[in-house]
Length: 285
Image 1 (cartoon, one colour):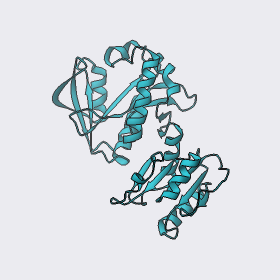
Image 2 (cartoon, helix red, strand yellow):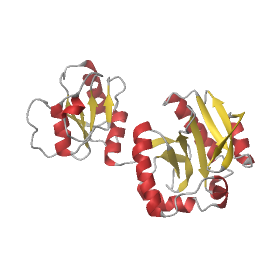
Image 3 (cartoon, helix red, strand yellow):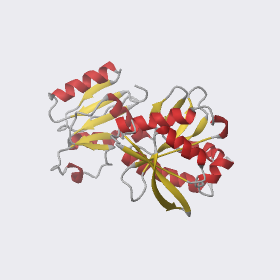
């Protein structure tokens, strides 16, 4: 594991089969494991770096609050557990354990610590979440004349954009688990562009979007990244259809969308004073 180093389990029934399975997987991933009795007072200990908590009771919540580890909370739909405590809320509430894995807990720990998720990697790129330290590079990227022509601009100042992105990270990444990500060079780490999935009011399907800095165009990178994101949308998010909204004069993007399997629906929408055509890809994976 990259960031998660230790997990504290405070579970009412420590003999459950799922816990044994998960503990084995975490042990194989090199993550240290501890179990706590939720009915006892919170112990005075020094926590290892990279600690996180999984719990289904008040004792575990108190432990996570005292040591600020963050936590995943299990509760059945009828439980009032979260209403019984003034502690900070969990990164995630679950109603079953089948989907919990070392990777899931790593992501929950990263969310608690404000560490951007790496979404996927391709042969030449890394697609990851944006973080506030990216703002300067983002403004440089959006100075590109071609991007200015067809993409809505950033906010007027870096301070305003930073506040906007802070809210975006919490609401979009934090709630949906996807969004408009950054594309970086896999070798150098340099910012190449942005790509990802977003929601548009009035449409159920996620929307695919992308932009690349001029020096990275014409090298097949956009197709490499967008195909990987389309596969991710189908495989991880269960998307059966994706939209793309493109300015009619952006003929390069129209041809590119068609190359990816998007088809013109004949619909048009108005967005921020611009007319955009709707393209749809069915079974994007």
